[in-house]
Image 1 (tube, helix red, strand yellow):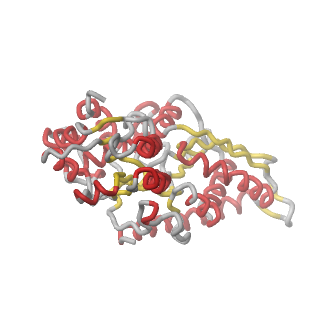
Image 2 (cartoon, helix red, strand yellow; image 1 turned 60 degrees about the vertical axis):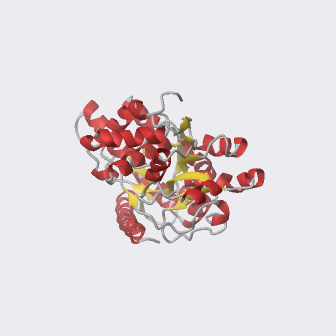
Image 3 (cartoon, one colour; image 1 turned 135 degrees about the vertical axis):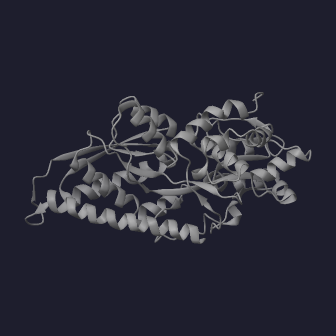
Length: 375
């Protein structure tokens, strides 16, 4: 495990401990026990609305009923978690249009500064998403057929650019960044590597630089498909084979899901390339919104839900859905994260931070200038 990832986990642990203290304070104020069954001042029921990215749907639907049972047993309060799946960009628009969730969890924290920027432009005042903790991780990778990747020693986006400049023909694809969080993250990484700067350091001048635009446009010239989701590319690659798509940008879990099936059908597996320049984590932040429609009891229940989702049992179940645990005390399941499934157990790459909301908005606007117009 790289030092960068260790430091990230350290920050996570610090935040987690602080959160436990906060929950204890709330408990002492609102849950004054006078025996095992009596709690002063408590409501009969609490409803929390959880607006989350659809990638997590299978995992959350599996574990949430258990949380509701545990909460009722522990506190004597019925809690109902209303699960609302949506695309990450779509979820931002929903909040801006008046939807009022208790908790928001886009696929990546790249959307947090974007929501805050848009919220303050629309309504003024303070940011609405002020604190968050990652639930699970899934790094963005370049997926490709093992024979091709090893032949050309592809380690990142600039290698793809150089292959095109040298006349090597291949077929590239990724989700449309206007429709998919995965597509947005891939496009950010293209711009960052082309500019030679970490996403968090990118400026408007960097991404509008003609050399940077030329590099991204050249890479995108190899595109044969812009889909609506990362999941589409894994299924399509296995179904259609190396002649249909050579390299594609997806979440790591897509490789896990399809690597062995690809090898059985085509004689070569799909493997993950972890970009040498660094990657972005789809870190699935858990955000209790700092909004006037969230009351203290909902906040309390949401904190308990957070601790449940970060617990060992829930985190182990998340791995079965291809997610890496955010809780560093939970071990990586080697039966899932291994080279046989096209991925690495230990990640030794630089973990990058998202760009500002202003830069993200500009990248989405620049998409029409760099995309392959024929796709």
